[in-house]
Image (cartoon, rainbow, N blue to C red; front, side, top):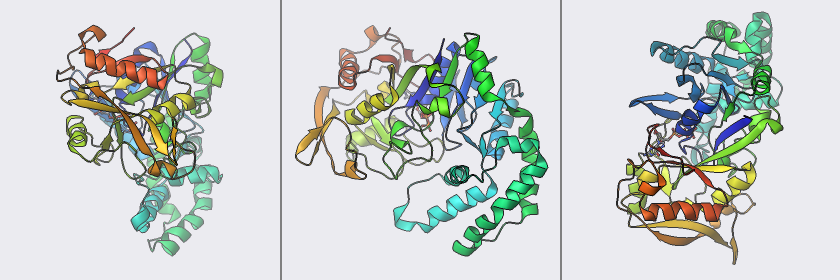
Length: 426
Ligand code: GTP
């Protein structure tokens, strides 16, 4: 089997964690290729809930290996806390099962401080960062002053690099934000114990991926956030600081683009968004409240209430086009149950015309007007359905319409958080 990418088609929180967890059965190696601990995958296995922010969800499957690729930014404290929690649950977290690329950039204490200070200083124009140092870490990567996991294997080099980075960080922390400057010795004191524990996990990730593929084994690339939070193609500036597209599964891990076979785009049966930014189909009526409360739409990482709205086809079409979707995994179909009518936004009205895709100009998405098609809803609880035939006709129609309007086939339908609450239309 070639590589399989599982990624988000909307603004994140599509339920990728469950889909990755399901498809892990078909893979030997599970790879994270971008983002950091701003992702929040919630997995429910045998009724037990586990939230993972950094470690690939595949770790819950005994015998599977998980890797963190070069495109990820790793907070060593979060990584180790998550690993310790899983160890306590009896999960094998040895370096044989969990590898970090030499080239993965590391979130340092000054990244977290800068992130929070900056967001606090923005007052009215916040972009809704999670304040975890992710953006500042990617900035250092681009500025060629980043600390990488491979540096943990050479403590003298690590100290030299931190010493070189600190003056500029302190100029910002103290000069611009009025915070205490950081001392090199204190930073090293905080980082070294973590570095020593992460070091055994540092391995040649591109080689691991290539070896796995050469042996005909499956590799699953696990995306975080979603297409419309992509740094290049998302609703800039209300985006995340990495590329969330399927194409980055190659660049962010060290696989080649020819290794990416299947692209599974995870899409909720409706739309949600956390934080600021344009959201054409957002609802502020009782239907929106239904989606928010029945869907339990609170962020796994921040606990923030998610904004909710109808399914948005221009958003989904753009995701299908940008990612090369081979199939859709539609999640949370159960949440729509009980709504009398369902709306799908099939196009946008914009500047006197109709658009099938989001407008390209920055900010223009805030000025489109959704063109809706109305479909009958269903009152049945579909969470116990295990085949398409068991779904109410209206639910089947809704899924068929999503296929027709997006141009991508539905390969998976999720009707509840549990592994077993899944339909493979076949
Ligand atoms: P990010 O990487 O942060 O974007 O997260 P994610 O895409 O993995 O989504 P997340 O796990 O944060 O949110 C999905 C939530 O929906 C979790 O609480 C899941 O347990 C739950 N969930 C997943 N699939 C379904 C489903 O089909 N129905 C219902 N009711 N809940 C689901």
